[in-house]
Image 1 (cartoon, one colour):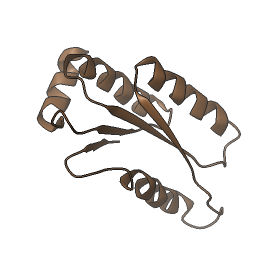
Image 2 (cartoon, helix red, strand yellow):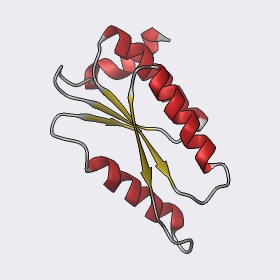
Image 3 (cartoon, one colour):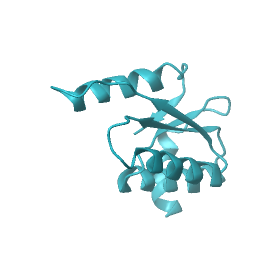
Image 4 (cartoon, helix red, strand yellow):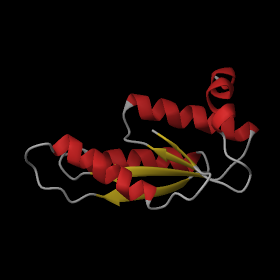
Length: 116
């Protein structure tokens, strides 16, 4: 898996003083991303912050957050949970996406990398 991670991340990996931000939902795709970044960061260490957005609409939302937190911390990554307070209704997915990016981008500084 390290060869795949190297090809994906090397061109975009930040300089030493800059962080990597991962948006992780707990689903298969984002957990695969977390695993790949975990492998690559062993070779080229950086501060990695795993962001998880808790929408509060699914019964399993607390479990997903705990799962993502444990996987992030197991890899030595920092973890942030963002609680989103959205009213259900039209365009929920689009509104949730916009709010997720707004929350995460408020922590990103120049030359840092965001992976989703």
